[in-house]
Picture 1 (tube, rainbow, N blue to C red):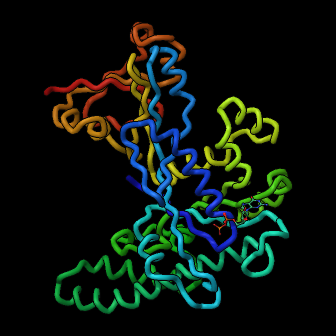
Picture 2 (spheres, rainbow, N blue to C red; picture 1 turned 180 degrees about the vertical axis):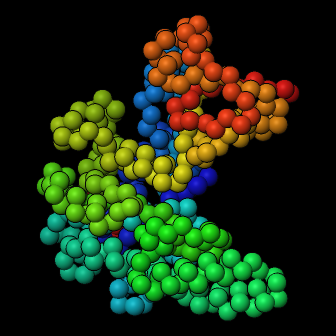
Length: 356
Ligand code: GDP
C-alpha cells in the first residue's frame, strides 16, 4: 500500500498526531486487511456515502478505504546546524510515497521550540533545505554514473537529462514538487523532494480561528496542501465515543476533525480514488489509482475479476440515492453498462460481470 511519511522538527507535535492516528486505527483493525505495525497508522478514509449505501442495501457492515501513515522518527536535532539527516531517516523517507511535514504554530511557553521561537516558515525551510541537500548529494553521485552509462548505451539519455534538470532546480533552493515542473523520468531517480508534500500546521484555538494566518501559510506552501489542526485536541477526540466526539467537534466550531481532513487530503495526494460496492453483506469502498479502467478496478477485488472481466454495471452514487434502489435506477435509465476501456469515476457504485 502507498504510505505517507510524517516528518518534522522535534517538539512540533508529531508523536501526539501519530498517536492520535494509531488510536483512530483501532477502529480500522476490525477489518480483515489491517495489520498492526508499530510505526504505521492505518486510518479509515471518512466517507459518508458508505453509511447511505449501507442504509439502502441493509448492509451488515461498512468497510471504508484506508490511508497509511508512517512515523519517520529520527530527524536529528541540529539538522539546521548542518549535521544532516541520519541514514535511516533518509531510507524511511525514500520508502514513503508522500511526505507530511508537521509544523508548529501553537504557542505554548511550556513546550520548548528547538530554535527558540515559533516560526513555521523557518521550520519549513529547515526541512526543505535538508531534503534538497540530500537530493543534491544523490545527484552528484548519479550524474557522472549516468554520463558513463549513456556513453556506453546502458542508460537512456532522458534519464541523464532529468537528473541535470532536477539538479538545476534544486540549486535554486526549490524542492522539485514545489517547482511544479513536470520532468519525464523524474520518478526513476528516487529523489525525496519530488514526492508530493502535505503540511500539517499544529495550531491552538487561536490559530484555528485565525483565517488570515492560515491564508498566508497556505500561500507559502502552495501548491502543496495545508491542514490546520490541534494535535492535542485530536488526540482527545479519538478517545471519545462517536456521538461525544461529534459534539465536542461542533462545540469547537470545526466542521471536520483534523484527522479526517488529513486522511482525505493524504488519500488524494497519493493519487488515489475509490469506487463503491454494496450488498446485504457489506457497503465497501475500494482503493484504485486515478485514471484506472474498469478491469483494473475489478482486479482490486479479485485478480479473476480482472482476467475474466466482461462488463461493469455502473450507477453514480447520486443517481442511486435519488432513485432509491438499483431496480429503480435501472428503470430510470441511470444504470450504465461499461466495457473494458471505461475509466472509473469517483463515486461510481459498481457491479462487475466476469467469466470464471
Ligand atoms: P514531537 O517531538 O514532534 O513528536 O512532539 P510531541 O508530540 O512529543 O509534542 C511535544 C510537546 O508538545 C508535548 O509536550 C506535547 O504535549 C505538546 N503538544 C503537542 N501538540 C500540542 C498542541 O497542539 N498544543 C499544545 N499546547 N501542546 C502540544
